[in-house]
Length: 245
Image (cartoon, rainbow, N blue to C red; front, side, top):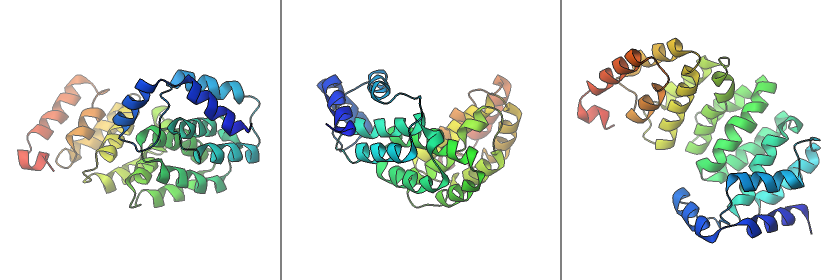
């Protein structure tokens, strides 16, 4: 039995049919689900393919593409997790594969593993890949645009990173009505604000007339209460018609 077939078999054996139905409905996906929780999925993947030693690139990509091609959602999630576990094996040319997977993912549950962890790690190691993110930020596929935002998340969360680039992307997407874009902007701002609240507040202040409620409510969570209250009050002062945009 091939390694990818063995992983799929173990995932199916560990599945819960009731959970599978619920997860498929929750994610609004047309894929098949086994109903395996994340701890069990990680256990299966890391039993067969431990994090150490790191897999050779060719082997990693063969397993990942093999899993991704299988009909089970959990196989795609396992592929995404493997890329994160062995990300140091990847090189800049692999950004093309990540872009394909993100385009085909169709759900935040996969994109949010591939973008911050895998693509984000690649960009940190190979800064020239910011040019790829610039292109993603204007892509017609909103999952690709979300990935451009989230690929910048981890260093910003540490109090480092390229906030100016994120701010440029966010300004380009600020008027979007797509929930997953609005939520991603708020998520990055929230995590940035835990270490740099003044930076986030200064960015939000002149944009309370444009920003969505979804974004703002997420962004102000770590800010000092008086700052959050001031920004939310400015947002609420907008007319109902403007807030609904």
